Image 1 (tube, helix red, strand yellow):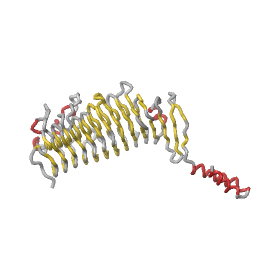
Image 2 (image 1 turned 90 degrees about the vertical axis):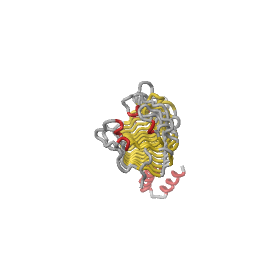
Image 3 (image 1 turned 180 degrees about the horizontal axis):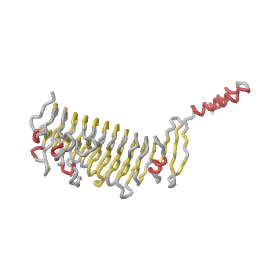
Image 4 (image 1 turned 180 degrees about the vertical axis):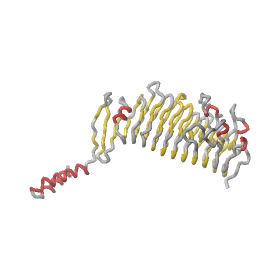
Length: 391
């Protein structure tokens, strides 16, 4: 109460006629600039889910705290744009849909979002939810995708774990988005891809761990994407960067694949849909560049993949490619450690003669392209040999 005494002292030294107005001004000044408390009313929605709502006077940003036994979706329904929703430790059996801009979902401890039964997507973020942030949660047991984000500008996934139990297709799925980061996440047990980014621009995929999926990390028809410092192991294929026909975006360009650990990706292919590209891939691929232009593959450690370490291939190998240029141009494979790959090829689709540390399936099918080169790599085998050197 020292501040109140100081203000009283200042008021007592004034004339009686001025005292009231000055004290009123000082009191208002104290309330508006000196107070740092949060208002914490307890509210409930129509389903009687108890929510704790905090509004900071310093920035007027709302925070909703979700307790075990209440609903994350109820909090989102009650939230205004820009609300942070903090989730207390516990298991929440529900699906979540985010349709408002600026929503942050953050776990406060061991938070698990689990399929209550028969639900395809765990967390679904839809058009209009720009600036979405998700952190410190585990999403598991859904039939299609743990997290799906589509058609937004601005996203952040951090310390998110997606567990598919070999029944869910995708872990973290981002499509038609711009300006995002996926970092320090973990994805395992997916029949298609652990971390997928498609038809998106300016996305960073960094310092994640993806294992025991068909594909560890996959990009499809993207531009200005960085795949950096990730750990990919025990998938059928570690990293795929693709350009495929039939999408809303017909280019894939300006991709950096750097400083990743890509090892022992020899898992059984879990994709059982024969119409999917992933179903025909041989197990044992480290990094596959299929169609994109302007790709830098640099300073990666790629080892122990039984079919090939780093491969550059035309999309034309799959058949007709209407609406795209399937031949990669300006792919540079530089300063990678690529050893002990291609030693045990297991494929009924691709010949064993292609098995190698470094594979360029261009000249063999008349799809050489331009500007593709290899330099300063540590490797033992390549197809063909020698490979064009970077000047």
